[in-house]
Image 1 (cartoon, rainbow, N blue to C red):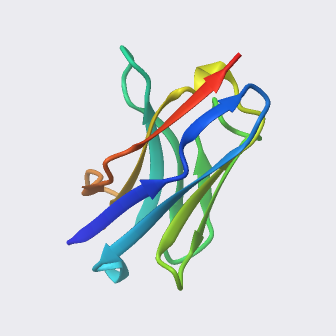
Image 2 (image 1 turned 30 degrees about the vertical axis):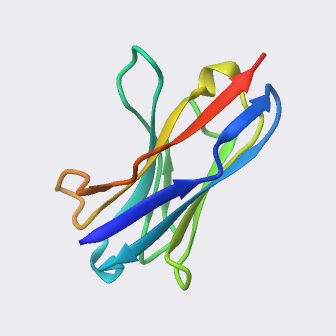
Length: 119
């Protein structure tokens, strides 16, 4: 089992920045990759970014490319999402997720952290 807890959300003005963190505990050695998803009210959950746990390969959703950066501290078992040039449409509940295999569902989820961007 892997436990995930996000932090770092909050209220920010458009154009500002926030950094989200996700602390992972448990059997993190079994992970294939970790990622960030978000869900705004009335919308479907959207892929934001993911990173391979044992390397530095990164992947981004089209709506955040060039503005968000995913990273991880392997020693601290922590995932980060640096969000720059925030827009009101980035407002959502942001979730950290992890999985043990590329072909599997995302096995583990955090409770989420709210990000609100004011115009």
